[in-house]
Image (cartoon, rainbow, N blue to C red; front, side, top):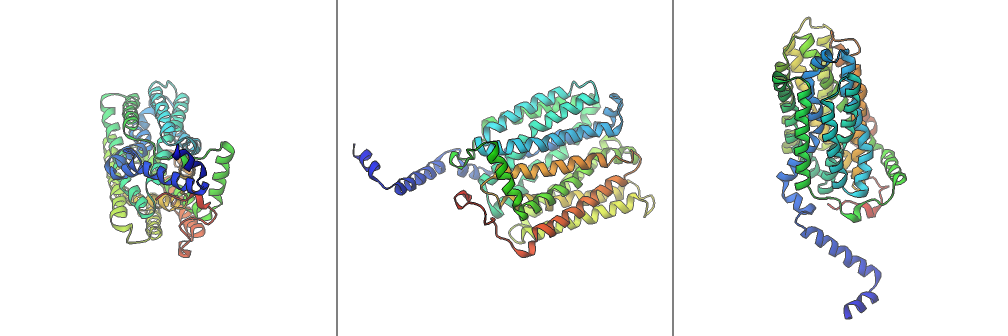
Length: 449
């Protein structure tokens, strides 16, 4: 057995090098490996876009029904808005669990389990007899739906790096952005034939289809040698080290406040557009769809034109400045500084605010994940959890003054926009041009790509 004799006498470093080379060659040759997935970009975009659309599907399709749910369940508007907050809170907390799990066990298994629970929880929402039970079921729906959000970002980090990752996030917004357009339109049409419970039936069907698509078409993207073997203690230690990185934390919090400004619009707009300005559910759905088109267009401008030609930090700064300008204009209009402006100027201000998110949100995620190749799942969990927690706090604040004024919505949006700029300038300090990866990361944990 000459091969065995040679192997036993070879130097350990030589054996390790050959084993690593063999593993890389095998991974590159696998028909479903990371390299193969990058070559099938349309398929990856379709699957990951569907996963990132989970929040929009869970919340936006339900928005036109909020006034009806308020009447049917005999609950005040502030209580029904908590059904949005509960779903958002569940998505935030669920990511803290699923993210480290995906770093330890791989992406595929936690994702499929989460999607199955999401389908069951969504079906249960359709039978909720009271507002309190609906809030509880929505919390479970959010906890399970978190798997799709956090793992989709981690898969992107497994496959791409640097500018390519920023471009892919912008491209991802094209397909995931269809959900905010289609969801309220579908929700409004569903309400023409059935009540709000039928919306959750449709969501159950969509969740089932997405589960089957992931099961059939998305293989594992995290190689076994890249996984973390530790348990809860190591996961907490990893998150602590990520939070100790000032620049990563700056992008994380800035992105969270930008998302909160967006969610203030999502939570308040059904009442602002329909109750204050008298629009029908179908008109509200149309306006929501137009705003989502603006978000997609800005995201494509970011990915196809700006990324690679202009620094990500500069584009992010422009996006945050536009969000702040739009929120300021909305505050002036809703407080009556310009008199009774009507629906169209307010809708225009909301369009600018939504569109600017296409410049801000992909770049906060990219700039943060560029620094964390060694723990993409945990980093993605922190990014998502921060965004959803801040958004969950912003949601009830927009209705604090009742259903007859849009001022709280504009105030929340402006405060969040200013806080995002403060974090970007004070923590990220983009003029200092920090290194792509923080020096404290172990060299053996660097990215593949």
